[in-house]
Length: 382
Image (tube, rainbow, N blue to C red; front, side, top):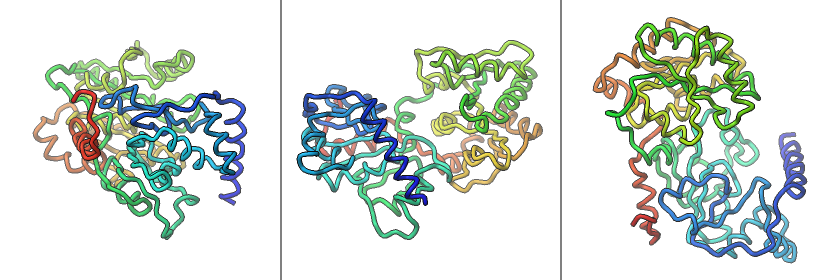
């Protein structure tokens, strides 16, 4: 049944793909690198933009000339199209910032060109790739292959290494590794990373309640409380998000609305960070920042499994985090006080081991730089 449902979804996606995509008629540019899934390119910090040719896979664009070549050869799968595209571009390296596309796992063997993959975000046991029984059936002896796999932690590495062969590295978050925290320049304020969702009420559960209690605690400590909205760049949904928090806040709320600065750069400006669950928060922790993760979701809410350390086997309660099925004000106060009042040395001694289990840290992405050097690829600043 799962396979029938999967095939049906794939057929519907194909119809949408063909009718709504952009069509390119000129052959793709021959280049040094191909970015597979071209909507996000964190590699531009190290490699020149003009050295990339983008291979889209979400229906944004189809190259007619490549598609025609495939049809002439009676090759009709999306993997065949990708391989023909790559063969024409003839890159030194194929890169992707998304770790959950199974076609990418087949490209190295299919094309003979090395592949490099980043983990895009934090994982939970309910993530599609983790629970995928179609591509990763239990006890399968079939292995995919990726030359270089750069992941958040050893637990994710253990999952992938049972299904993919290659060279594995635990680097944490690639984008997070680029910029350090300037602790001397941080505002002594709180930033709350909002997980409000205008499409999924379950994800929003208790977000406003937690923010309300944190704000009250912050007022007692005479510390400014700020909310980083999820929909800063979406005017229509930002209004909904603001109204969501205004239902419980009596006073004015300070929302961080700057659209011209990335969330990564914004959070580094603040001394204390809080969230229910958040990749940004775990990345902040990896750099030595102080963050509290407080997740109150009901028993049937899948967002509960996004809790800090859930995938990595950490307990439901720790020094700077807690996860329960209903709101617990004493736990909010406990975590709040720990984050604000624990000195840096004690924080490091008590928490570094657990933080590294969830997200590693590789300063300036030195591992990635060394991989480039091994393949005689120079960075744009070299």
